[in-house]
Image 1 (tube, one colour):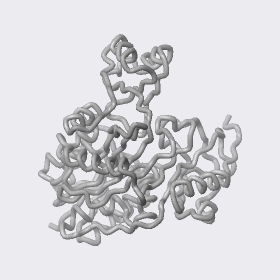
Image 2 (cartoon, one colour; image 1 turned 120 degrees about the horizontal axis):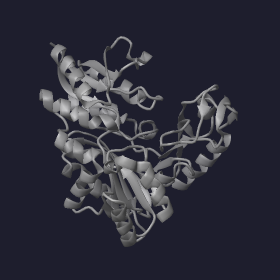
Image 3 (cartoon, rainbow, N blue to C red; image 1 turned 135 degrees about the vertical axis):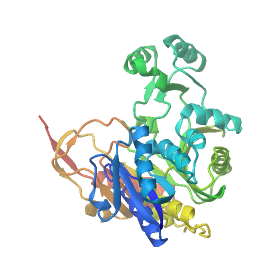
Length: 406
């Protein structure tokens, strides 16, 4: 029986399409049969011709049962979850069948924010002060200690979904009611004021073989008010930025990753201190993967697959100019009557790639998560400031027209 790999793929809004195609291409090239596990009722055209199974991916028992059935028919050698929420179930399925990769214990370091912050502290990495919202009094006491604003977030969330910035006692009372009986699923952190960075990395046998430091152009928690952008930092890194890369390697090795892909976030404070934010054992979300592909010449998910399936492979990435990517958003809501096409955006000076997820007839509503957007674009520039200037030009050119959806 020829070796097979399992790709856990959620075909939502095109966010994972490039990753999915790259993993399929690498596996096929290396003689491995791609098997795809998708949510029940979601069979996109890109899976045509492949072996596909469906399951309720939001149910861990159903997820593991589906993998049991697949493993009975195929010699699974690796599992590749592309979505944050599938990292832990995939780890449990690996354990079930003796498949190499992140174990459940290691996966918890990347999924449970309570666990990851405690583990980072054990590794000597500074984290935000936090508390559990056991009672309203406990949160009020914490607020008195660290001051407002506070951040209240699910301990196993993603994309800032159900994440609240709390600026005072009145807002805390509102959020407390919204959490209700689910408050045990949340954690409370001090609001860290600093410049936000992320590092996208590939590891092979415990060593970092690729790393890309990038700087957010906005506060991730303020996605409703600011366009979501990030710009690479490849050239002339400061000592503080180099320190972020050092801490990133410490975190990834300390969390137990051997071979894999990771997206880790840090804050750089005005005094030079670096504070760990979060870590995910998956490729960066949104347009980070196409931005790195445009700027460095590798697809993070595909390269992860190659490192797993070909131990002799060595990652080679070009350096190139600074690359920026930004979400496409609009302050207009209602039914779309007109919207710029990817081709129109790609024709703009400096734009390397673009995708628009919305089309005429779709209804726009206020965003509820940081990745609840219309699409993205990638552009290049001489340096950070030059990329910012190009962002302004693309934003000005992006057109969205709406009418009332009532």
